[in-house]
Length: 423
Image (tube, rainbow, N blue to C red; front, side, top):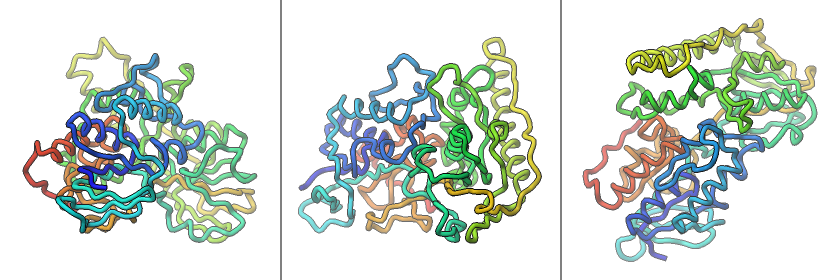
């Protein structure tokens, strides 16, 4: 089959590109390994809600129109939202079509790429990779030494407390996934230990507004790779220590290490290695917490300056900041067997994973080399990667900007060759 454009992935990023291509009258298909928004169906825990408020669920030609703009969609609600979006413009999605290979085409005409899937093969002039930032769970080296009797699981495979093996749980990683899962487990009666490494602490709300309202209003989400000194480090930023909640009575509550300690979660430093059932932790908990608090206060200082400069003091609440966390004495070694810990749950993020992309475009870390979504290979694009161009590129709300640029370039509105960064 010959077609102008193949989009890989029918999540929010792929559908955003599809909508813009449809508006431009360009022939294309969207290939999805499962159903629309498959990762939100099969790789998220049952109680998960978005970190971003509903009003930020903006896509080309589509936005949240429900009764609760300040709420947070659950994963199942987001699936329905994206299904309705796809149906609104009859997106040409082909489901159950996992991609096996994308390679240079030897086919007829102007086709540049051969896209092989379990549902057929396409010859395409353009390919847009829109599989998002959740390629493959990132496991630390410590995972290799776990004893056979312990269950090891990643956040993408976790569903609910009842599905875990009996006993306590060691949660590794204190970003959004780690703190949310730790909270759910301890509330379900599990003994929980949280191994804390680098993390980003922010309040859910500040001065009466959701933290994302401030990030959006102050322009921080619109900062681009040209505005930061270290692009690689910016792309490795941890997710915010937040939780979204559908219950209006619970909305606006913080979820940080202080909250978890009050619930009974034990905090330890970064996990260094596991040998059998012995888990060695660094004594760096205070260092990690201090660094996170320092960064949080810099952000809140910037918000306060914005309020003063914009004359918003009469419109918002007085500043009230989260307090300093009281830390336990350092723990360097955990005997998982003696403490009846039956599961080690890794909430340590994700890494790029494109085993089917047989083109010379991958960086040493496995990511796709690109500049604003345009790669060094004519006709090959990417959308939805972390900090692809803007700080919000990895969020649902931010992908629309990258999708617009990519589609404009694809249809010829931007004719200049992209300078591809090696970062």
